[in-house]
Amino acid sequence: MLATPGALPSAGVEGQWAFEVKQDGQRAVIYLPGDGTLLVRARSGTDITAAYPELLPLASVLGGRCAVLDGEIVAPDEHGRSDFERLQQRMGLAGSPTRAARMALAVPVHVMLFDVLYLDEELTTGLPYTERRGLLEGLGLEGAAWSTPGAITGHGARAWEAARDAGLEGLLAKRLASRYEPGVRSKSWIKIKVHHLADVIVGGWVPGRGRLAGLPGAVLVGERHGGQLHYAGSVGTGWNQTERARLAELLHVAAIGTCPFAQVPPVTGARWVLPRLVGEVRYTTRTRAGRLRHPSWHRLRPDLAPDDLT
Image 1 (spheres, helix red, strand yellow):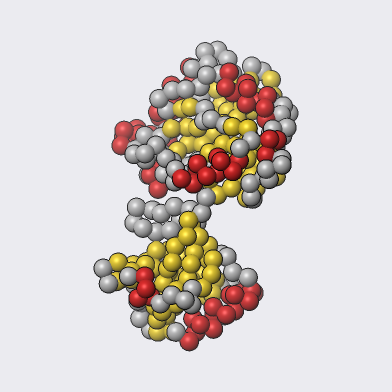
Image 2 (cartoon, helix red, strand yellow; image 1 turned 90 degrees about the vertical axis):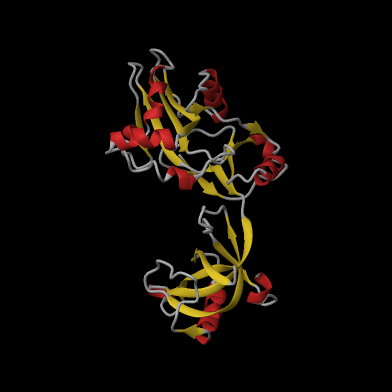
């Protein structure tokens, strides 16, 4: 079951929803047949058990009981927050058990278990969220590499503010009466992201294709540090057609033949412009290299010059 992007439920109905922290990791379904083994499958259905050896002890925690659990595998940073950049070092190692075991020591993972789909020979997907949540909490799944994260009913605005202040990615709102809908991107689960804003300088663009031919498919943006423009990422969403056309005009006028970034970004087909346009973008987090994650265009900032950002 997948969540639909959206806004917080209004104060008048928030009592009908539970709120959980949105984790930034790899979605996984964990099969516990009750015979001392376990199977971990990614959202695609791929068997990724061997990639995460620290989860193997979970196989015996329920004794002989069988269960199928839904969760998110994360790699916590030094503050305990999920860090997708760290997790990427662990992903894709299912075919290399020796390397996976070595990486487990350097970058340990933790699985956040937030739903139960099958328990004690009974399919639970038809039960409402509140009953499934009660069953999950009753399993007492708290261990070195797994836990059941908290959920609160109502108080969505306060939960969102707390997530924002803690530097978390956002919230998941789940309707209390909702059933589990496998494979469905449901409006009964809403993901509400916490976005940050940054003023950036446009240094290039990549032409769009199809109906966007001649228009920017994405702009390449940077930030000034030490007198140089450092690449901060590619922004390809957030415009309407009028804004995209206006931006295309400005980019064509500012065209130059050399890259204005301190290091040439690894972007195929890039076209360069004088670094004089300032824009404001939304983003979720930053990588260790300073790149913006999930950036989207917010607006041009004609009130700012590049020198204002030094």
